[in-house]
Length: 269
Image (cartoon, one colour):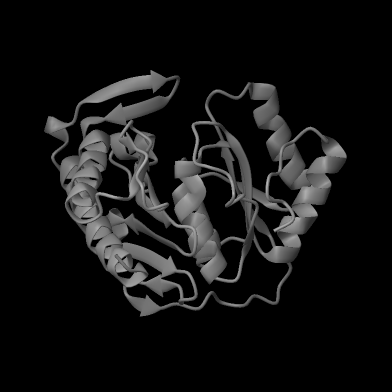
């Protein structure tokens, strides 16, 4: 299988799964909700979307690996792994909101591809190694802003203590001199950065499935991020910064001045 084959399949799968997730949200009477942790929801829609991705890969790319948030896992033999967040922003999804997305990254030894879909607003971003950032199938160029950066989206996990939550807000406002905004979805926030609606994303306690696809898209948009591509996908938490290159560097330096123990794998990339 070639990179082109996988990119075509990725586009078809993200559209199919986005439609499935939106249909499940709109038919709310059939939605079942379980708790994975405090304010951490999982629904039958999450599981159905991930199962659909697994089924499509078993049909077309049985040699590829799969690493899904909701437990769909297989190692694969090709060296390529599909990293899936079936619904990022499930809390928003459950409440009938718009700020949720389907996110899929395809990570190989020689290429990367990714797509995110925000079905509620009909948005699909996609990119592959060496190619342009695509918005709904057409090339998209992130607008250049000459003004001083002003807005930072932050991701703070529900397991984090309140004092650490407050420290993040203080860090953004005091040390970076930026406004702090949260959406309840890493992918939604990162989409804003990728499209030029925000300048920086700071994620504390993210997982690989939250950020892998957006990291690929960010590279296509000419942005910098701190994800380490050499690390194998795992369940562990990651600290993830993404945004304007100079601002990411400034944030890394500032966070280390506050706390030198903050892990920034790939910070030099």
